[in-house]
Image 1 (cartoon, rainbow, N blue to C red):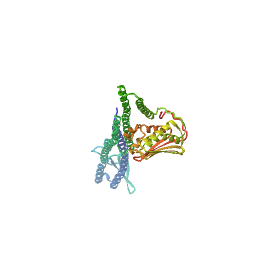
Image 2 (cartoon, rainbow, N blue to C red; image 1 turned 180 degrees about the vertical axis):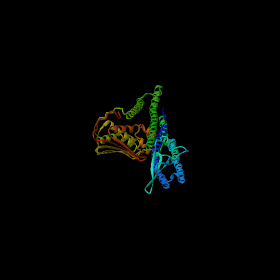
Image 3 (cartoon, rainbow, N blue to C red; image 1 turned 60 degrees about the vertical axis):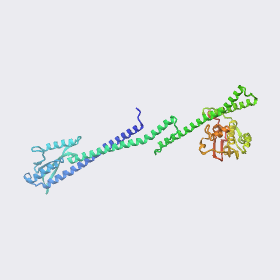
Image 4 (cartoon, helix red, strand yellow; image 1 turned 120 degrees about the vertical axis):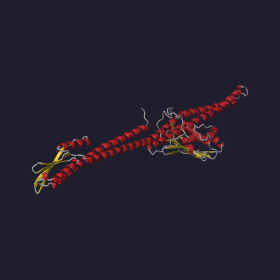
Length: 479
């Protein structure tokens, strides 16, 4: 049977509370009984000495058997002590019995002893103490006048007041135990709710994420480190999934638009030629071929995109010692016409920069970065520099273009992410370039960084190790 976490926690708290209260009850009751018995036993010894001293002080000496005042004193004392579990017997100097406590006329001291023991057994079921007697001599002026024999239950006897005290204490103790148990159960329910409630919210939020709802956030701040970390993790997951969902939706819209345009051109031109409206001249056929090449490039970009995000795609890098400055300068020459047409100054700062790289793939990195800079720069200039910095070869492509918004910076290396859709479409971009750049650079064991300020331009820095690294297989981009 599956139980809710709150139920399990509540039952655990209740069971723990019962165990602690029961343990406290047993232990405290045991030690209380022991201490109370010691106290009663000590009080019994003191009482015996007081009784013997009182009788000795009032003993008349000779003729005690006929002294009505003394006998009346013994009778009152005997009845009083009988209620406290003490049987009194008084003997004269010759051993004759002067007095013996009795419950009713004609009954002896043994009858009193049995009655007291029966009363004690009723109050304390495990009462098993023996009936004991203690003798005290009555001595005056060095002469023995008689003796006192006190009978009582050893080691302790609970009087009615003692029994009343214990009964009242046990009632209070059990009532407090019940109160503590109820309070513990209530606290357990509250604590179980405080623990299971946030987890239930996180569970519900996770279920909604699984159903495709990424908009809501858990946003819990419980003060419990693990639960807060779980909440933050779920919120981060929802945010990441929402971003990926938006990217995928944008990808569908973008590629639908990108493919629709050349297909429409091909369809309209071919229909016109079939209907005899246009003559299939060389120029028109070359124009249609350009559209086919354009579609081929887009298909190739999609292929690059899939392989860049597929860890199982094989990558074989043909690394050779290369002059990255020379590579950058040769690639820049191919963009001089486009840059000049826009009035943008394109420059290359050559420094000593060498590293073992795959020339074809690393040329694609430089080409993509310079291409983006030319597309998004309408004034100022574009500066490309290459140099060695310690054990890293560093390539920097900096422009005075439109820049990138701060909110877009975390996503610029995502597949198909574009900060300005209308401008990207107008310039032929499809958002694949930077993701491919990142995949190639990381496959070389390097990293790429970007910094930008809207309206002031952007700078991309690529760093790769200058030392020859072992060949990488089984991961990366195949182009």
